Image (cartoon, rainbow, N blue to C red; front, side, top):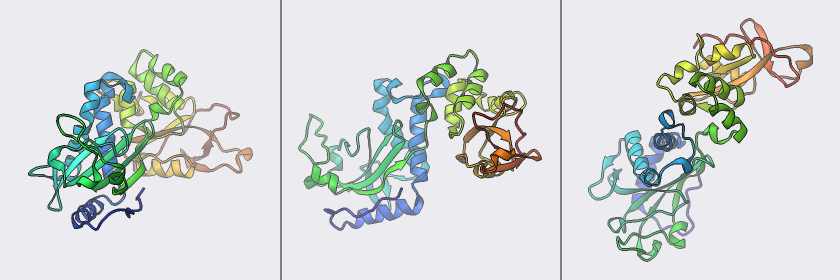
Length: 311
């Protein structure tokens, strides 16, 4: 979500304008920045090897390392040059990258005083993130709080932030949205394949990311567990459940059915039923030579259609 970039107390600042223009030129919707933050959370959780999917499951040292990983992943994504003093050089301007779990609660070191900050906040639980620019002038800072002389933004400084994106959506971690009884049912199963099947059975109509699949499978070949030829698509077909992927014709079919459309690296599962006269008001799609609708609870379970070849 692109935010109103005006800040009521902000003074004209040519360096902020230059950095802002560069960032919006590279990432007008914020999709790339959001993806870098999503990667950071997924790297820290390392669900494929640990089964973790909540921030609270991280060790204290891992949480402390989050800001460094955000900085690294943004630099990888945008290929920012190294700054001579601070983290980056963007549009020829020294910029320090700061991340915090609380909005605008960044710790600002002495070397950044008077310079630009690219400040970020994100919450996996809330599924939101923000990014803004602010100059770390004395008038925008609190007094030093500790021996290393780090400071925070004052109330005046918070008002001076030029938000680039504020409270924008972060790719959802579906495991944070499921009831505890569903989580227990999924992770209580003995094999990766059974856990994957249960995930797609219980998280119907939601976008399921590749990282969520890896977390549930906890296996190196986790993507194999989704496909046909013995994977979840094969196992769930007799229950009428199909799994749409990121492919163009899958996305189109999901859209025609009124389902969320899977993005890159995402899946959406749903139980389907053959279209009958009492489905006259339901959205439908032609699959495997027949018309199908998203099944209601009252619809009988029937073998689902084969999805079209990848295209």
